Image (tube, rainbow, N blue to C red; front, top):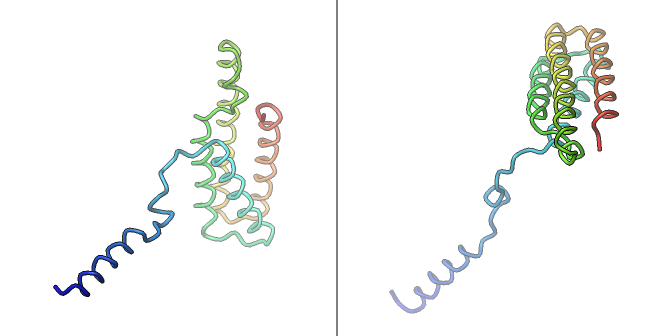
Length: 144
């Protein structure tokens, strides 16, 4: 190779080493937090509510409700920080109470899945109201 060609090849190799790395390549998989799961639940329920408010429950509603239920199941294993910081005797009781509250939410989300499949907007809205009550109760009892 002549000197000019070698210089170009070395220069090009240097550029490839300096090329920006995409976010996907640099992102390390971190486990989802409790906040991530709760956010997934909230956004899923909002999407279903928009459908029901419009009187049109789409075919996607069941999958969206399943996503919310799966997030709730995952959240069951991640108690809020304020519970984790309690003394051990109190912590165990509060974790059991938190998990029981999440179990109620999971059951209500399973009902929502069924109702979303029926595409009955009125029943879906009624179930969303129940889920709102479950959310309020849980936040009063366990939110930091």
